[in-house]
Length: 208
Ligand SMILES: [Zn+2]
Image (cartoon, rainbow, N blue to C red; front, side):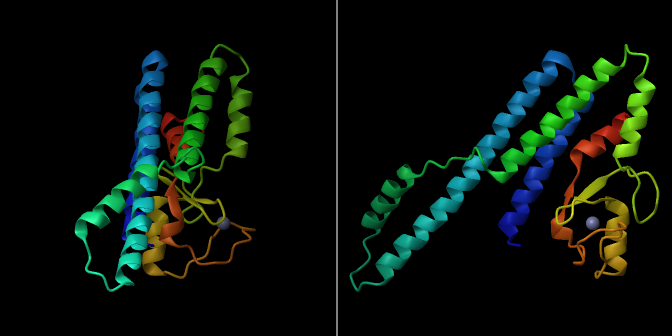
């Protein structure tokens, strides 16, 4: 994984954490307002990233073009060419994986908020709780304890607590997913783990 990719992943994780905090500490109108601002920031970040990638491609193309002929490089000409090419770049980020994933997390968190406000006045909220506990796994497969900082394995979708999976990988970097019946036999890679913000918020709010 390139350092640029790593940095981009870290930035994205920070965005997700901020979104989770918004759902924890804001409500109602204010929550909506801040979350809309957040979505806007994430979209702009995706746009800048996409533009940077394209810019690098333009630079490579121009460099190749000018290194192949024997003419003396005219910096001004190259700069003009670069500017012309850059103006043409207008990436469509609507299907950017980071943006799509962020919006999905927000949607899930929003659904939780709506469910919580719906469930309270009803008498059968115990049934709802039972249902949630049955369907959402909150137990770390390594320590068999309730998770506090869940990390999702992007390869298979299973979730582990950050502390225990990190400790495990430190002792044995060749660790496979410990979930019984997991079809993926590859070793767990730290690069494939991402913070499960939606579950973390649910654990914090004790809705699961
Ligand atoms: Zn698994």
